[in-house]
Image (tube, rainbow, N blue to C red; front, side, top):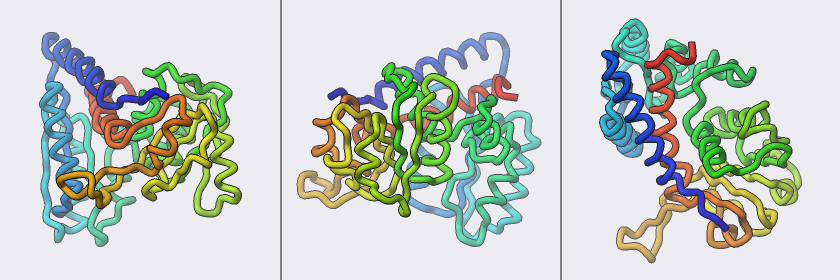
Length: 292
């Protein structure tokens, strides 16, 4: 069994992106600029945004942050998005989700210029991804693909089972794994709450990607010997083993499953570090105008 080290790949990609930025600046081009809109004061979102800003500065990006109270109106947010759409100094825009319930996430996502949609959620980017055309890929699926690529994990002709069908992870990674590419060319099954014989379906997978949002849902009897297991979940669980009283767990029961795997992502330190670096990769592409 080999651990797939997302921290190591993240560090390598940071150096690669920083070198690209250095070359751009040396050629007299402006630094990539990532804008983030956050509405409200959700603690997890605030931590994530702070990490994005820190990583931006580490690779030489500019970052522009817009903080709104939870009482901000939908019209205010849409107006700011339009302002950023028209601003040539800003290359990429992220609106941190979730939003307060009185603001429509779909309206917000569709309002972002698809050429600045480095989250990869705009319908145009989603459609282009589905067609195998150049597009900004959603960050977590893009990170998973990068892990598979850099660990030289064979995906062509393999049975891939995806647990979860969200628009953020499950659906896009199923498309990426099935498309004509490397990594890709897998035979993909998407499982969800209505799937029958779930244990048997999972146990047939050469590659099992778990994004179901339930802590330690996948147990050893659901995993084929020698399978590759990608755990997208992250949960803060009570634990007597740590000083904090909490421990991070994934959607996979790691201690049970890991001995059966050829490769597995740990939690933390697997898929998580790839999400932010994938956003920065998209922002670099936007600044270089390599997608459109």
